[in-house]
Length: 518
Image 1 (tube, rainbow, N blue to C red):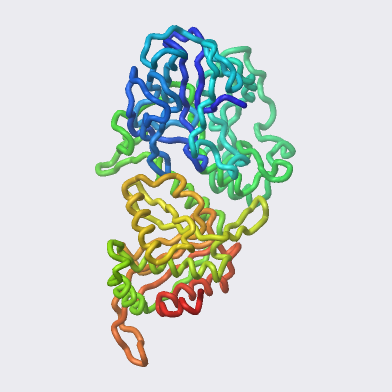
Image 2: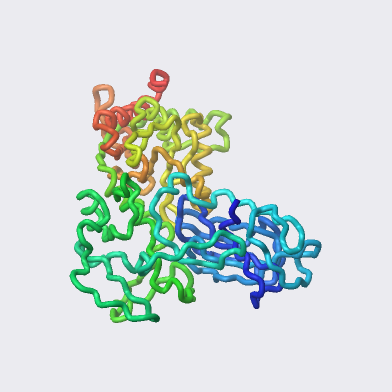
């Protein structure tokens, strides 16, 4: 078995080492994220730590995560400062490990640690145990085959580990990415190394021969030009290394390696989220601010671009009288069983969506481009769009179709509170199948919501208004709201989307009809 990929044992003789030294690399905290920001350290250099003790708070593009220690020992160095955005795989902290038989804080002499199989004796004679990989660390199975940009080398190889393959010739992938100045920009030609014999002069055109160009279809090439992605920087996942639309869109969510990747990393003294000065040569007008694109904003931008360029959206609207539902809510709130639980209109909408999804399964499905299949889910993982101080997140309620109205109301309250406090976990943000966005809380009546990538539909719930409405052959003031349904027209036809929206509207306008629909 290979050694833990998130830790690296330093070679003996390191001048900083007073014992066995282990570097801990920033792990992938789930969902294939490529970078995270260290918000704060909970330990200091020289401090004794235990296995799984929280050592830092790390902010991914989705959530704030507590990072536990991978081992017991003494903190040797904090390799990255608070406020630094760090790529996955970068060493962030090093530990001095205790010599067998000695206390963690006791003085220790330099000792080499073998990097062989777990369970083999180390230099001290005790069996070396592989530290368990933390839950959520590592790419999901779906992302194992996704093309990834080459990350920079970090740390040193463990003694006894498999030999590393040489780096491919040519500049890093980020240096070969086409500039974003125009759709016909060519890849940057290779730059010869600073040292060594001079490169022979280049003759002819720098444009590769058509036979050497990466294989792709015309629509994919057009998409790549529109997004400023150079196809020769991607590895195709299709048959015969064919570059697919998914390969191009996946490249959007993976930031290129900076040119100064091997140089010292800069920590902004002003802290994360602080407005930056304008680039050299451009004066900043009074009142203008420049904010770094990262965290949730960066993830949201990539997700919206991916959704807009992948799924053909269609949106339908339905305005209904929800006065009967509001009257029902008053009765439910008077029920002693609901004491302490705030049951809202959104709770009823969530229940209606689950019932309508069971009657119209195409709305609770996803499009698998690689397998050329439509995946219809057995249950509903109901996503709820939540506005937080960090930005928009869409955590989901797993198995929402199994919950009663009262249980849904409690789950919604807990989900919203967790999101607003910034404690939403990556697991809660993953695996959604169908989403709701409540734009009514902002006083908006209707909109055209963009799909969450990988989902077939999203329902926007408008504000409840008192309006003149036809009721029992007369005009009366009634409580009215508008529902807006966006769906992926690749797998949902207009008829299916209309049936789904009509079912939700029927439940909200005539709650008693639930008995005839389930």
